[in-house]
Length: 376
Image (cartoon, rainbow, N blue to C red; front, top):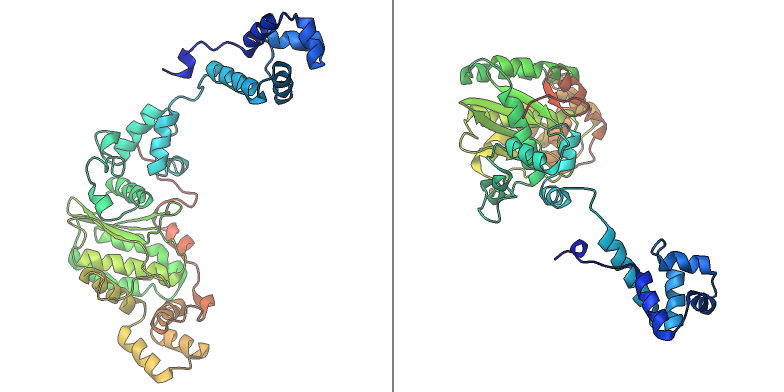
């Protein structure tokens, strides 16, 4: 039984009963309280509530705790209250698990009533009902995404990339064309603005390439998966630096070339920076292989190892710039690899220039002020 189904009278009714028990009339109580009759009459008639000050005065007048009258008034308010916002419980459950508000803000789903919101969420995650959505359903049935420790925000990002990928039409995928395109991609490494050509090159190879801004608190660099035998590469560019962009891209391309991600998506959360996983033996072989290919792409491994052996422990900026020119790389790519190999994360940071805006020019992009309009 809810509070609204119980008849709760206004506290004025109780005050009248106490007045009758004492043989008081309204004027008597007004005298005891030290207030005028009009003020008291408004309370007795239920037109006015009991303030905190009046609760204390009434407590003294009838020799009971002031909280008694304060609680009477609060119970009356709660009994009279109506919930003007339908679906609060349902929205709480959804928002507790998924960043629904941010998904609405990004136009991934539309703001509507709770029932339709649940339907949208189910369609977004390609499920028959909201009860089957991963993380909402995992208490009853363990989800493969939960088992793989993919966070709800990462999962939402992944499915957004999947949605966009389904809407794209590309030529048939050719592994040979993609491998042959690597020198063409390598020729873009001299200047950040050349990143605008990446989408065209990958599309010609039959690879769907999507840039999608990550959701708050969702560490993710990239993803590789397949749709009907065709590969998809999604990137977040969460670290807007030239070394991160090319390392992550080449990493995901290596996954595609090795046909990784066909059984389940390969999700790479943090590939560069101090917290990156690196080449530890605990890392799966497919990740170590992709890391090695990406590192060699950014700065030829044999040459940079030789450079370190010759110059260690003194690395002048002039030498680094000369090495970059000799190997036809932007200095930021060389600096990125040196920082990692030397564990010197403050080294020549100014060469890690931004690249995202250049990459967005030629790519299918969702976020950063852009939105891909899709129908659920």
